[in-house]
Image (cartoon, rainbow, N blue to C red):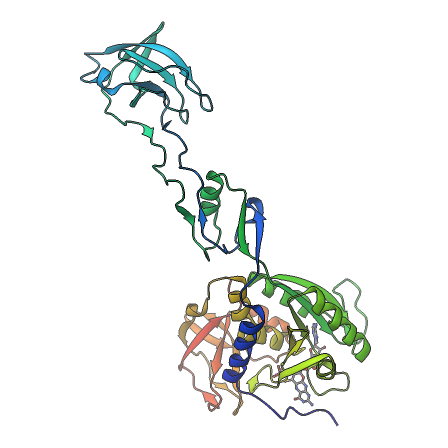
Amino acid sequence: MGREFLDLVDISEAHRIIRNLFKEIYHPPPIEKVNLENAYGRVLAQNVKTPIDLPPFNRASRDGYALKAEDTFHASEDNPKTLKCIEVIEAGAIPQKRIKRGCCSRISTGAPIPEGADAIVMVEYAEEENDNIIIYKSAYPGQHIAQRGLDIPKNEIIAWKNSILSPEKIGAISAAGISKVPVIAKPKIGILSTGNELIEPSNDWTPGKIFDSNSHSIAAAVKKCGCEPKILGIVKDDYTKLHKAIQEGILECDILITSGGTSAGAGDMLREVIEDIGKVMIHGISIKPGKPTLIGEVKGKLVFGLPGFPVSALIIFDVLLRPYLMELSGKPPIEHRRVELPLARRLHSSKGRIHYALVKVKNGRAYPILKDSGAITSLADADGYIKIPKNVEILEEGSRVKVSPLSPI
Ligand SMILES: Nc1nc2c(c(=O)[nH]1)N[C@H]1C(S)=C(S)[C@@H](COP(=O)(O)OP(=O)(O)OC[C@H]3O[C@@H](n4cnc5c(N)ncnc54)[C@H](O)[C@@H]3O)O[C@H]1N2
Ligand code: MOO
């Protein structure tokens, strides 16, 4: 006789157990340092302060002439002022000469302002005549000079803990001379597919076999959560092989996700293996799909046994794993993106279980997708799913439903 799921827990209890397990096992999240070229999209684990003033010195923000503003007062096309050019200062150079009354230095954008100068007149408003510079426009003190620390002074925070490293933040951090940043380490998620019928996707189909789609769909979903997937391959429905694969997988990963073998079939032995090497916390949840989902602990790490049906596996991932994986990797939650729409067709549900039904959104209405959990194309077609409470058997056409986007980007 196959095993029956005697201890179905409801979804809120499952969430409570999972939330507590994540808190116990994976808190606080480990931190690692990454080079700036690998920092994009990562979550900052600590505030980053600038060790220097930005800009680090008073610098020219225009190509022109560094001078004393008072030497240009009342200058105009009709009343030009003539100054003596004493130096040419390129970006990256150190000015050698001090600006005195009646003098100026030619300066490039980004070059340090020489001592004694308090303004820049742009080249457009001046003319060179041998060593003399004719100035046609009056300048005010501070004109076209970016003062040291004006952008941000030394020791101020330039990027905040828990923020996602965007191109702009990476720009500010590198401007401060910082080459490595502390980020939340990406949780490593092992992925195992179980089943004698499974083969790797390729051009060679063998009768009776199925291409393993769960490994790849789950790996992509894991990436979207900011975690690092590690596909561990296909394991046969064989106690010894599954035992070995789980033992090895759990060693090199923070969390292990399996698919298949959760149900009551002859080859379904996930529960037996987990019971022997760890502890089964949940086996059976009153939801559809995903009733035979198994959650266990092995060597202080979590094992999620998703049902084999591709639709069930991904929906359960989205409902039960995604929120916690995102929290673990520091990604901001995305629950609020649900949209309320009218249902385009009447929909029957299964009484006694919360039902997650796939829908396609067209012309502002939610169309139920009426394929079974084995039909992977129903997922590829779906825009999201709706959650039907366990005491509801029929949802009439036109009822307002909340569509959760499936694994949104
Ligand atoms: N007698 C019963 N049979 C079943 C029950 C039940 O309560 N009593 N529950 C059904 C439900 S609901 C589900 S969900 C499935 C879950 O079963 P398993 O987790 O044991 O999954 P498998 O039997 O191994 O596979 C189910 C189905 O999915 C295909 N599959 C599996 N892995 C992959 C993969 N990596 N890529 C693509 N497709 C995969 C597999 O070939 C099967 O067709 O059990 C029901 N049965
Ligand atoms: O629980 Mo199964 O996942 O209904 O298809």
